[in-house]
Image 1: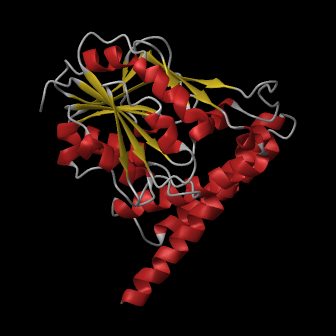
Image 2: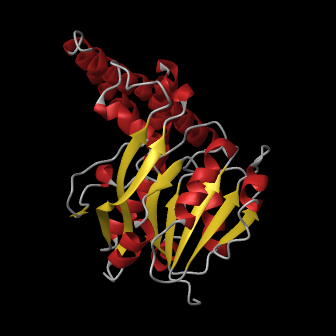
Image 3: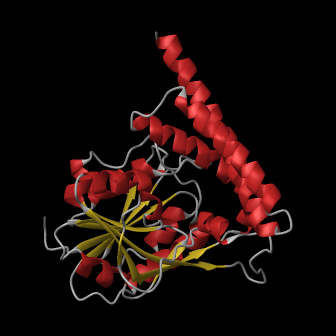
Length: 309
């Protein structure tokens, strides 16, 4: 690879309102070496290109258009265009702290490190505070991620760094064949779990995954995401994503129906347990609703397998 030491990649789809601030936070990086910023325009129809071109006088910044919609597709495109061995992904509605790239880059002096990400705080819309019905668990669906103030090496995939503040070693990404295009958001569907899958693969192959609290990013909360319906929809797609992830791992089958049913009942039971707590009650209802999405995907998978026979 050339002299570029780290590549910051923003994958974006119709987020021109937030994109400029995300790019500007990268242009302000306090980084001792050479870095680049790759903006992957994933089929946007708004002012995305204009927002980027207003800043292309800066030598660090480059723009690429990817017409095939899908976050994992865009991430793979960004990796192909980037020039460095360390790839750092920032969401288009997030803002990185000034030392974000420096903290990430330094961590990869550890030759066993495959993935690293940092703490994520939330930026609430002007005049809006966190709703009473929003639990800490559901706040994680908005991107919140805080494992404390010390570096932690992740042992459980469920604690994996969030994709909005995420870095990966190129050699590991190539080893596993890139981001799985069957997972990750596509347009308005909220498929997810691609980062969880990456951490599972890394740990299985004796790589390390790290949480770096000083690699701090703040994430804008869009007003439309502060509706209960958004969280229910997010829970539904989370269930589908979990089902797909199991299928990709060879864990598909009739046992998924039992797992999903048990989790659905458990979610309803806990919602009743927390009836007097509006935040925890809604949290458990979202979980239960997600299991309906999981079961729906599992049944479709079983029917598809049966038809192929």
